Length: 287
Length: 287
Image: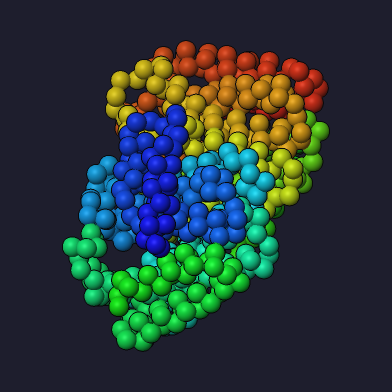
């Protein structure tokens, strides 16, 4: 049942992303933006936002522009992350990365464009909580959130793996942009402060668990299934959770975070079942 | 008198930029952002916003976060523009460019961070027109505005200089981000639709004139005064207005655009004097 609901959210989101207005953009820019934005992926961020909004009784139609915005921000971060000056990745989801296809200049611009367009799309919403939700997403994507994590990830490469630092990287790089969909989705549903705080707790634990699982998959995953080069983290001295605590402890910690995430949503009762099941399914990738 | 008013706006803006909260940002990111954001410059975009807001009876204090946001967006665009994969510039305002000092990875992230932080700062405003002004700025910085112009500028390099294409580049690359300060400033002052339309007319003509003057200065300017490498446009086959119409016609066209800009603000009466004088002063750089 969880799989079915997820598929329904995803289909709705894929259609909205594919129909996204991009008037005025030069053809090459539009093509490069769409190449990365419509290249599949789990759509986790967008689906989290739609389901969080529904969990609190909100309207999915109102939430769609914000779900699209999150997917655009995620896509921009991957394009810039893959650049030669950054992680220098040539494959992503089984396809050549954006700069391999369009060149570095257009890839940089396409990333900038996706980030800016996310805000342009959100700013067109007439929803009474649109401005608040936009602020929440800006903060998560910003200098105390995703960009903080990415900066530490890039500049601390090769330094000693210490738990505090790695957790800071995970909270920024991954958890911030998995928490904002929950909190923004709840805001768009008119949720209470207490509900938003519970959602924030859920998102942070889910996000940290998700990154730990990603680190584990880089060590143990199947490259054919993953559609990208594996084993790179270790080779490049990336700061990962398994490097801090060992593989077994990393698996235990991921499970612990998912337990905490599931507990955080108890106040939502049966309506939280989808998000709780989704959180638990994260662990199936490595267990 | 115009100079004095401009200096007052600029001082106010410099202080706000220097005091800008950047909590949570890793030190190296903050340093790199501030290196480019606080490296001087004319602060034209921010000053335009403050003065447009005042021209329509608005409060400068309310407008400051938006003026800062525009300067952040301008700074991000210069950092990314200077990257080796883009214009490959090593000097800007008499100082080494961001990537020369901090490396390409941090420079890309600092650009992303300035863009995102602009939206984060605007989203913190409690002004009733904040959301509308943010949308106006997002559109100007986006795929039909600044990024459209930059994409054409980068990808059409070396093609035949045709007036229609060059005007499109100028409208996007420069005029969009000189128009948004005017329209957003007017929105924050609660101006009427007609006033906003007049402001848009002014901004577009000023912006096109400004870029034509910039193109002329690249041919005729004094490198010591400009603080950057000159003559690069021609060497790289950049599409410039003088390359389309010749140097003398380019000067005449700049003057024509400034005349139109000045006329557009006639409905504001004496209150428009500062912006009109500022527009006219643009021409002094080349005449």
